[in-house]
Amino acid sequence: IGMLSQLQHIFLYINNIAGTIPTEVGNLSKLTELSLQSNLITGPIPTEIGMLSNISKIVLSHNSLTGTIPSGMLSNLRVLYLDHNRLSKSMLHLNNATSSLQYLNISNNILTSFPFGKNGFKELETLDLTQNVIREDAFMVMDGLSSIKDLLLSNNLIYGSIPNRIRSLARMEKLHLNSNSLFGTIPDDILSLVRLRELKLSHNSQQTLCFHGTACDPYFGGGDMCCEDGFGKKVCTDELGFKMYSAFIFCLTPGLRGAIPAGFTNTPYLQVLELSNTFLIGNIPPEIGGLSRLEILDLRNNSLTGSIPSSLGTLIDAVVLVRGNEIRGQNKNDRIAPLSLCSNVPGFDLFEDETWCPPERNFLKEFYNDAKGQEW
Image (tube, rainbow, N blue to C red):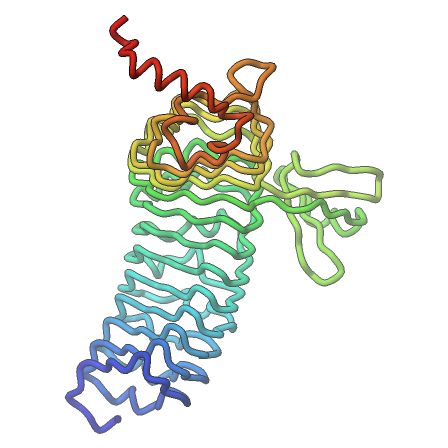
């Protein structure tokens, strides 16, 4: 294949191609796009691909590639798909990349690191690292991505608090940090992202782990507590998730805590808000009902209290999930949801629960409407 010197495009996806990528691909100096996704390709990505000065798009998804991304490979690319492979080695050698890359997808691999906090990805708009084993402080994750629109980091080991600097990512449209190890509160600064369409922070709660005090003292500081188990794994939490049962036993329960921030009127384009399975407390902000584009509201399995705002009844096309909290009805002694939710929102997860949504109320509403009660 290296003799096809005028070749500009290779499209060989979904062809059951086996073996490794030939190093001769590096001789195709006029190649602008390489698409080999959904095959049976194994082995490392050849370093020779980094010599292709005209290539702008590479798609190698859904193969069995191993190793890492060769140095120099990102210098001219704009789009790179490497998802659903077996890449596992460190990516920290990319920290000096001066890349024109705009889209990078390395999701569903076994990556342990990525060069967050560097300045080599100034044009990157989409970064998808979903479903890896990357362990990094959330503070570093938010650094060096000034052009980012979609930051997709679900199902990793991202820890720490969501930093206030998130407000500087003004172009952000999708922020997926669900199924990580975040702790602390959700900062109000997240609501300054006026373009935000998807916010996923679910499943950021962990079981309590206890340590001998000597495993924690070296990592104490800055208001957070970190302890290390005997296998080198570090577990961290803020002071609300830390309890000391004796001078020698420290127990940590990492997770997102505090109230859901008010001010969702600043995010009018929000379509997905997922905050389930954390340690959130307080009331459900009624202004969420004003998010006319909202399609999914997932608040399940927290410790939310108070009544369900009747304003959520305006979310007629949304899925509204609130089970697993300590909420009550509009009257303190009942568990009856607002009629607006029970009659207007089929996606309400208590819609069919006759305790929360008594059917006789709907009959009365229909009678009132049929009798033109609004004219009485």
